[in-house]
Image (cartoon, rainbow over all chains, first blue to last red; front, side):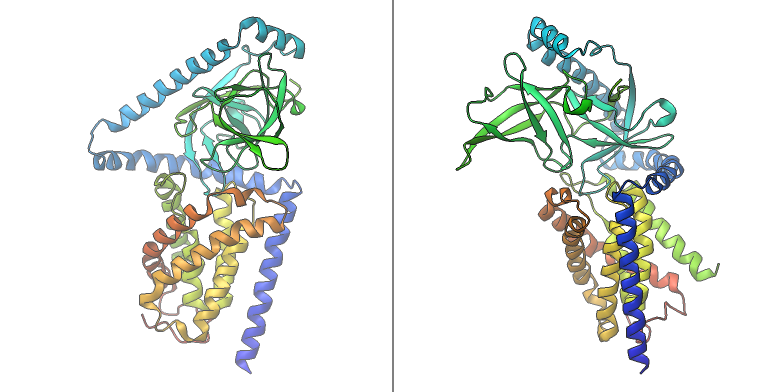
Length: 277
Length: 174
């Protein structure tokens, strides 16, 4: 009798908790802002402790790595990669003739590219979840970082800001499975497609391009500036690694290597650009 | 707040800090250890299905605050892991299970990693399936097999002499 009562009580509790979880998930998925607000508060409260603890523990890790100056060298290395990335980004843009670029920009009335104000931010956390490709930055709303702003670094587009708190921001990387970027390519960058993320660490893909699309290995893809203005145009997204015909579909699938070095994101720039700005 | 509640909060807070400060930094490829799945396992083993579900739900919500995944998903999976493991424990596996904790941890972690994207599909998010599931299972199952024994020990310490008393069985013997 007691066992049956205990079993019923347990079943009731588990069902109630599952329903509560599904309710929370549904409310959040429908755009409820309470969860993001609580998360933001949690990040602001825990960030100083986590950052402080990592600073304290870092020398131990560095010692174990066998190098007394490893931490300083790593920071310097991250800064140098950041500078190199900026140069690579500029070189990639220059590889398309400036005349073409001017033409494209003029066509799309995107003359603001190159003059967009930026906020330099340090990456304080990479990939908090194994299921998503995200990074966390040490700058938030108090520094002018807002949801939707593009993030660039180490050669090209990194992703966009998807959540902010007062002093931190979460960036969804291009490789995240929910990421999709409208890209332009071809000699006049007039051909367009959508570059999809395929999960953490995986390359991007352009799916079901029409046969005969002028895209070859090594082609540079830039943001098109379309897609409802999610990204400004002209930012390098990636280069084509390979393409293959889709059996029976008469199309081509393309694998794209991100232009930015997403495995080394010590510092990034947040473009203070939002859709419609 | 009782001394037991304080000890439980201390244990959960310490493990959350361990995850955020250390384990998130120890990536193998793009995958890092994820000890959250060991907590409902420990709760289920020590307190039975009801306590495992309640504890898993609470701990999952706490970890959800730190994660970019849909809010509530970790709570849902942890709740189910705690309930299932607790059910096994109530059927008499708890007293003799000591040496088998790493095996249970590996199996329940693998199941949790698989359940996570599958349950996400239920709420309309099919993107998580694209994560490198095999690599995640390998890393998380292996590391949780190592971490589970100390986590169970910490939670048993937090329970004190009175334990978590919702299981029909007596206190675990290991």
